[in-house]
Image (cartoon, rainbow, N blue to C red; front, side, top):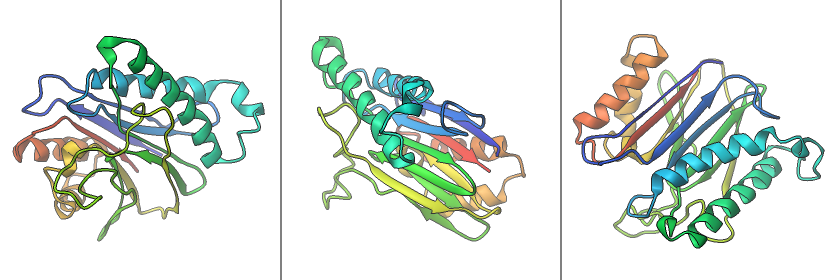
Length: 232
């Protein structure tokens, strides 16, 4: 298992509200962990919400109580146990402190175990499976476009409400498949077809591939922060 991640401010934003985490080694009960969190644009302190989400997930994943808790019955239940606590912390912080009022973030987390991915998603950051001749979007976007409106406004975000539900995914992987986790700063600028073409057409080094995807998004306008994690 080998991963590489980058986050970039883009060309139009004054600050980077994305946060990422990519660890190929064990963290708590997870053999590896990959996270993209995108502080919701237009909300207060989006960069605080996204960075806090990453920190809280890693903190709760390491807690010994998780091993003995009745909540630990599999990855879905584990994600729920952790995400519920994360959401409570972020929601309370945004409710009690005026300077953080309304802050929230997308949240995409993936772990891989025995050639199978396990993912949880809130918002419109995306998970793709990449192969030689295919790109498959695994996650569904939680935004107004998905709801049939002509807008990319987020309809679900971590910390936005007192209670949160997430989408859960499990999928088998082959040895020739790779993963891409990204914020919408990439997918709003670059088509799926161009992402696949760039991934397969770039020198066979994972860091080069990630850098090329960032460059593509900025070349297309770079209207938002851009985050990319590749896992091979």
